[in-house]
Image (cartoon, rainbow, N blue to C red):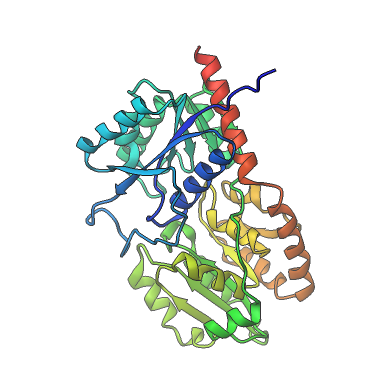
Length: 380
């Protein structure tokens, strides 16, 4: 009996040399599909955002994700004339479906173009709409998703929103798998960063944006016992509230309690920061999910997060972390204080490693292919 040929999927999305969680996770998905002989092609942009639209200093980091041999840089996100090369790729490749990540209205015009082509489109929905989006951007995002055949998302809360909008469309939920990592010995990592070996290190990592609640974390940390040796480490580029945060961290209280690194951390250096930490803190006011949480689990770090969106689905209370109420300074401080206890930290670190191993990119790719099969069968 002849084996059935694997389904062929064309992935369109950011990858090398662009930085960020979407580029990294889209590349990991394409790589996992290739290992299952299911990747028809991987179309990536040679340019994403114009300088005036991008709030960060630089949107490229060549170490952020691998350069896959299947990746073909063939379009510019904000140049519709370049999209004809995508149409040509559709004609040349024998793809049964196109998969595109959805997380921002900036990509919606391209998505609207894709759904008008002959090949059915499926979306990996990281966020239904921008975290700080306007009503117009929300409308544009929803309009783009209208033409999509089915959805894969990482949180039940996002799935619930999509099912309300599009009750007849196929839907799958699969948590973001932890990435492969190469930790550094903790004492070496702390030597490189100049962190005391005997301090309890709470890490806030990634882009600093208002919805992520760093201000709440700063207030909560001030309530921790002054007779315990702890350090709050903040590493990430600041998008918004720059002046307010600068005033906060300039308070003399933080001279020996805070390591402030308001810059993008290149991917090749991120392992030093994760390896030096004892606890990852995600004090988000709202969230659909977090690629940082998946990274932290890969390093075996306990999570302190808020009960919002996909975070409370990833954090199992008392197993791999602790949960606090969003924007609640006292609740967050109480959770942080529990992690000053070394026994509690070790217990949750064991749980973090165990929970993180449940999910893989292989199962993620298989979940997506199941979604595509269902979507194609429903419409046939």
